[in-house]
Amino acid sequence: MPPDYAVQNLQGRSFKGQNLTGANFRGKDIKGTDFTNAILKDADFTGAKAGLQMHWVIGLLIISWLLSALSVFLLTLVGVLIASIFDARITQKPITGVAVKARLEPAFGYCHVCLVPSLRLGIPS
Image (cartoon, rainbow, N blue to C red; front, side, top):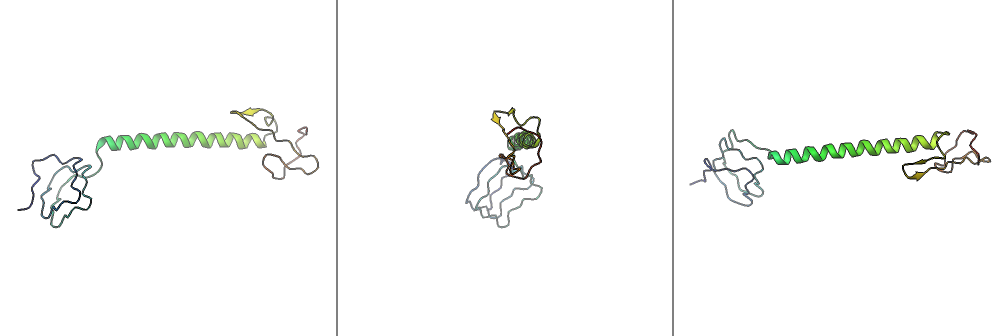
């Protein structure tokens, strides 16, 4: 006779490698249940509720928000550093612990920091 799980709590349960041929999971909440390598031939999942358990959903949302905030911070920092390289008024000031000194080579017109042709902005060498 096939297994019947009509009265059991199946959230987060593991059925790894088990033979569940003809099992009845009708209308059950199987969130977070592991069916890795299980034999599910003729198993009935009609109306079953699947997905992640709530604590996993909350944890993944928090991690994604933290990574988003970190990327915004890093992109802002990179933007400020790039702007400071090309802004003649603040090139001699330290930016967040990194001293940016972009002296223009008078003879060649190249920036020592970024090695691209630059305008002569009147920064003393």
